Amino acid sequence: KQEVTQIPAALSVPEGENLVLNCSFTDSAIYNLQWFRQDPGKGLTSLLLIQSSQREQTSGRLNASLDKSSGRSTLYIAASQPGDSATYLCAVGGGSEKLVFGKGTKLTVNP
Amino acid sequence: DTEVTQTPKHLVMGMTNKKSLKCEQHMGHRAMYWYKQKAKKPPELMFVYSYEKLSINESVPSRFSPECPNSSLLNLHLHALQPEDSALYLCASSQETAGPLHFGNGTRLTVT
Image (cartoon, chains in turn blue, red):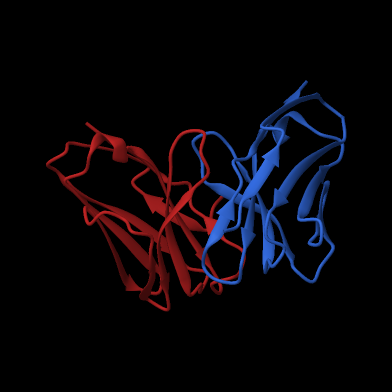
């Protein structure tokens, strides 16, 4: 059974800092991995999707990497801004409709 | 702005009421999902429709009844709910079943 862990559960950084969020998964036989952000009381916004054959994906100040063999993914946020404050969730797909979500990392970027 | 629209945004209902949650997408996606999210928890999958047919029911109690009238619409009919069913109900869609998910902003449901 796939299990997804996100560490830390919460992170507070000053504005402008570069930061890394971590996601680990127990079964390396994944189809893809998605990173989402969720603002309080809102739905999830898809940030990046990495297919199992890819090593990384980039969108603006965000870069997500995937290392299947070690069961790890990282989300790198460059030059963080207060607007980046949200909960970030990673979700692992096994090729079917089911995603396994981590519990998320709550990020606070202080002005 | 989200491309998946959910109505209503908020709903308060008693345990004897019948209500429905609605979800609409016009991206041509063939898979649609219902998730339930409790506070400070990740979303939990409830139902999946693929090409308008129910493909996954995650052992959800019968007081929740999904319906997919067409490829753009997804409903969740609610009846005789319990206070513990209070949660954020999220609809999502994807081009295919293993593709990136697009979520709506959810319906905040309170059962009194």
